[in-house]
Amino acid sequence: MGIFPNLPARIRLSMKTKYSHAKREQYGRLLAALLCDQYFGARPTATLDGPAVLRFTPIRQVNLFVVQQLLGKWTAEMAQLRSPYFDFEDADVRQALTQFMNVLSRRIKLSRPAFEPLLAEAITDTLTGSLDPADTFTRKLLGEPTACTPEQLRESLRYLDVNKPVFESFLDTLPAGQEQERDYLVSRFRLHQEACQAQLQPVLLVVEQFNVLLPITEDDLYELAPQTEPERAAPAASPAPAAPVAAATATSAPAPEPAAIAAPPVPVAQPEPKPAPVVAEAAQPAADLAGAGSLYEKLRAEQSAAPTLSETLRQDRTATLADKAPKVESLREAISINQRFSFINELFNGENMEYHAAIQHLDTLPSPDIAKRYVNEDLTNKYQWVRKEEHVNKLLKLIDRKFGA
Image (cartoon, rainbow, N blue to C red; front, side, top):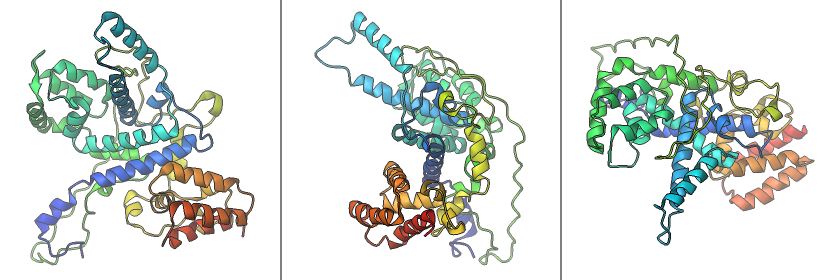
């Protein structure tokens, strides 16, 4: 029997096909944490520059959205430099600021605490855009202004990869140099989207790219999971079998885009990223990881047996490596993705970095007694772990496995 057996089938069908933003956000956080574990885990003080960000994941749209977020934050910080006591419109001042912005754009330096939230949001936005291109148009092209010209909108096209031809063809329909109201542009784009359905990249194709990194299906993104049991409320008519979803067999390589973070109105020259296939190598500093396999290869090898997102969302109790092996080399490696997410939420108030710092410290302690004392006294007092026995006991069990107790 379904989750809501008394609802009419028509209403339940509409609920099943409604996508969940909360699930996209949760998947974004999970995948961002996983990717950052792979990159920063052994080198917590490592940083990323601009070219490394553009190659960090094999999904180009994710990388571009990270760069676009950097642009937004950078522009906001530059605006704070303005003061009523100085003439920021003076030609010499504008030239000096332009030079400063150009230099700064070539000095991107992201540590894990700064990069991981940007990555999680970029993953969520990529999934959202594949489900609803109008959302990408509204938030990624239009942004905050109440009115725009086609020329202003084209500035943001450099940060789009998924369905980019559809956005370009829409801008081609707008009168050059003419400013249009925001609401008019949004409604007109929705009509254009309906007319170009055949040109839109299939959702399944985007989901499959993410599935290589961390298991996910389109059904995992629904507000409610699709019902599989027959309807009792309508015995006279058997539900029609679901049509099989045809897997996408090929994609064209995206055209190269400027890699620069360009702050309007002054373009910033940056090296252009190479055209990337659907699966690209992740960025790794050559000095630190020479000869190592790509991030994509590591993720594919390590996550081939990982649970799907639906299992992640529905399971209250998940098995860790400590439940299967008599001994583990380190807590960081032993804690599964699901268990890590549970620890972060239940024990560390949702703070990823505090969780990573605590686990890293536990891995340096020389004996199980000292490690357990750190958990039962220091961490328990710091985070007020009241009625958290189930999660604390799982952590203590992992400590026993690490020391072979």
